[in-house]
Amino acid sequence: MRERSGRSSVEQAAHPRGLNRETALLVGALCMIVGFIGGVVFQAYRSGSVGEQSPAHRPAAVDPVERNRSETAADVEAFEAMVSAQPESAEAWMHLGNACFDAGRHEDAIRAYQRSLKIDPSDANVWTDLGVMYRRAGRPREAVEAFDRAIAADPAHEASRFNKGIVLLHDLEDPSGAVAAWKGLLRINPAATTANGRPVSDIVNTVKGP
Image (cartoon, rainbow, N blue to C red):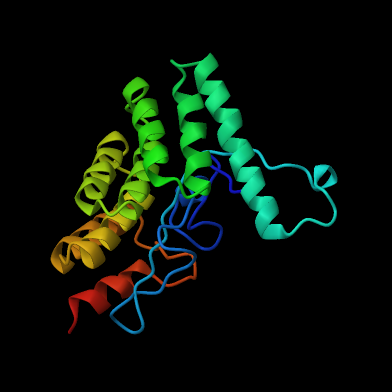
């Protein structure tokens, strides 16, 4: 499973400062800028961490896909028990949100992240994860609002600015808004790159056109 506050979703590659502690993929894996040169990539970063079962504890002849399904289901159950025992713990709700994120349970993840943020509204990573889930649930305007809340909580938060640009460009058809979001990222980190090493400045120039 992925790492979270420790999760680094666009993660682990030459990326902008501060992204190595956030994780997730909005659209799948490393993206490529869609619609222009084969497409824009959307890497959503999430934060937080969910435990992974040690290989020694896994049955030997289990199909990897089925094994992962059973593990994510077990994670969800474990964190549901945790929030029942600690309903005022923002971290417990965040972990439940991460488990639901990994299980593809978008609406459940949204509810868990909302509960976490109600307790601690200052966590930019959780706001970013919530934005990712809103986008996956087909709610792009709410995704942008969540990314804006992440930026308000931490103006130097790079993942939220990058993801905001992706949603504005691809879901809301607002290229000028996307460019503005990415320029804000470049003011923080002029050398920002995507996980596959593409400079964000190149993306800005591509979207802007000649």
